[in-house]
Image (spheres, rainbow, N blue to C red):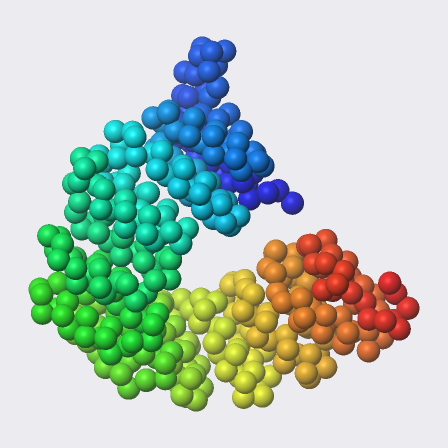
Length: 393
């Protein structure tokens, strides 16, 4: 399997050649004296030694065109964060502040965001505080980046405090949306709703993102009547619900046991010009499985396929246990095999349950195929194996 860095490199180079079709001819004369940007990025993404990666990244940053490639920054910092090499992240991002680009707020926002996504919130705050001395004017754009850094680093409780801080920056709709999201993440739904009221009081029009976050929060929390109230406010704001709005309502209906209304809602979506997606069908499948109505769950699954959606991990992990419980191992096998072939990694215990069930029904060859495919997709022998006594190692 190709590594993540290699795949991203290929994507990056494709984008580069598309946006700059003359680069190959224009750079040919200078290739003998300096490597092309593609070569630099290739070498960077293929570097396995993280210390050398940092040194190469800092050296590459001396190139103006390199510093404009956001995706390279994102991938590199993500790699270092995954390895928990936070000192390396600091070394790279602090080094960027010596370039004149830092006076441009967009470049500064990138650094703040990368610190946030790495869980290094203190560094994000420090960078924001340093912007005036770095000759970068702070606006609501960098303020929102810092608010988002709190979300990305899962410091939800710090969002409102920052929002209320005495900064000479006027929040915009995106600022309020970030605070609403933080309250929803913390389960403080009434506080999130209060932000909607404050937003409108201050002359800002909430957008569909605002309402979808609130709808999802209230419906999924089982506060269906409150969700309906928010839906009414959304329509009075002349906003047209999208599929995310309907999916939130759908989950709310299922949560309060209104399965027939949920099915009707999905059926009516087509007439409203909105096509249901996999996130519309999955809650219905889960609801019917929880009610023990496997036949209806399978019907909804077939509807998902008929609408040309691809079952995802949630679909498989919801439906397969009920299929196994009902002894329908062949369909369970099909779902698992299809999922693995799409690199949809489901829980190994679920795969093992299908293998065990197939063996009990003397379907040894089918069980072997699932184990072999699982091994091919990097499931270990300890996580997926033929059961003892099956006559197969």
